[in-house]
Image 1 (cartoon, rainbow, N blue to C red):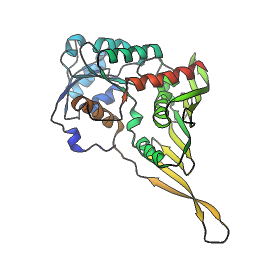
Image 2: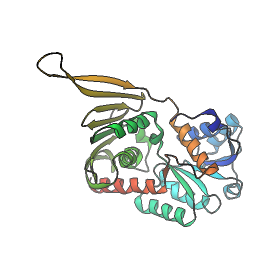
Image 3: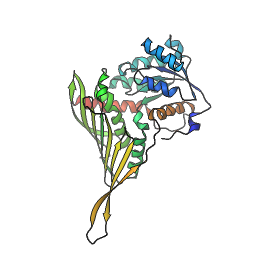
Image 4: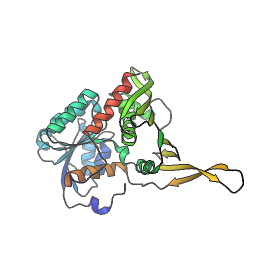
Length: 323
């Protein structure tokens, strides 16, 4: 998704508050600070040392009274530990009607549904941080899948040993949730779930799931916190092509079968092509889409909304129950 300069330099200024400036929050801080149509009003975190650090680095005000500061902004980004999302959402929504919550929407299905219901009842413009929707590799993949004769199966693999630092949710809610969202986005509603996995310290650390979609297509998802290699891979098997995607290298390779009729006998061979992928930073694209939804709510964008966050949690819950 290419972001043209005029889309970033919009005349409207949106006042934003950022709650949580930890591992992911610091990235939101960096991106929000470069958007010319955003004025970052305040940052809030329970860690005063990290607040002092970013206060000096970005010259942004530290919140001393969060409830009072919420009255001064048009939008809030919540990037705190997953188990605290609902707590901060409850604090924010009476004052602010545009809310971005990092993925997953919450730590369990019941709480996620509460957030969805409150959002609907109070007309909240709520976005969920499924950043891979904005990955140039995924955007290219979706275009290719629209052109294919038939999608048979899509494989997703996501591993990250470093992710073991996350202690409030398991590998399904932490890592696999990204690919659950993509599987639903690409293949649609699910009618059956099969899964297996292993646990470490009582939490699921490795999981594999096969989703059977209502359209007859399949998705296979693998997520691991114990694999000693960082992988972000999507492979799609179609009737007329095989698509190999690396989300880390932003690389899409397509293999197609060709028929060589140079001789009397027919020889089958394969051609390979590399698809050009946008280098636009996914988080930048995601935040621009959020800000655009505030300034121009009638415009369509690919951001995940509250209902998408809940739908992903429903599948995550089924996968967890089977392990």
